[in-house]
Length: 187
Image (cartoon, rainbow, N blue to C red; front, side, top):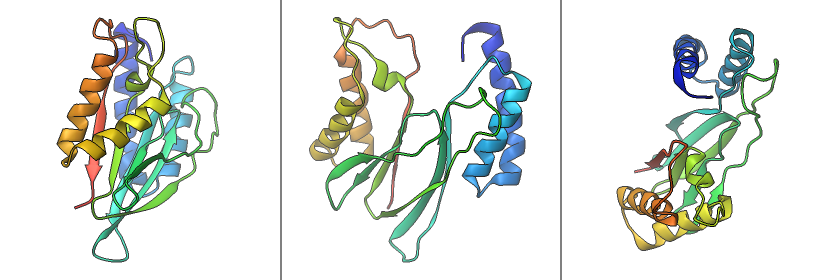
């Protein structure tokens, strides 16, 4: 939230708190996010952060993996089903953290099968605008992930294609926000 020294100090505070909370709430994303929210609200209530905390664990059979997560104000993760050949947002509630005490950040669980993919990303990929100030948007982003997975085989190729396409949306865009995307595939 913000830029410069205040943002750097806030980031250091977030890192210190998350490092401590991780040891206590490793397997409980909801509680991790709730405590983080309360601590950040008390520490610096004029700032906020968005985030997602999740973990992967072995499923009931050898080819499945469980993804359990909670989010606060962060864009919805995208789940790409290799069987359905379709991407969808994993919609879960949770407002940005730091504004209000005692917010709830529910856990969401999904079972992934071999070949399924999860994409985590920052809002900079969604909020990029073209020359006419039209936003890239969530619908176009979901279509982009479907296209990337139709055209390319490897996860790395899909990530490269997504970043290239977003950057080409406005080649003269003066980037104001971060653009990060992480892809995870069950193998």
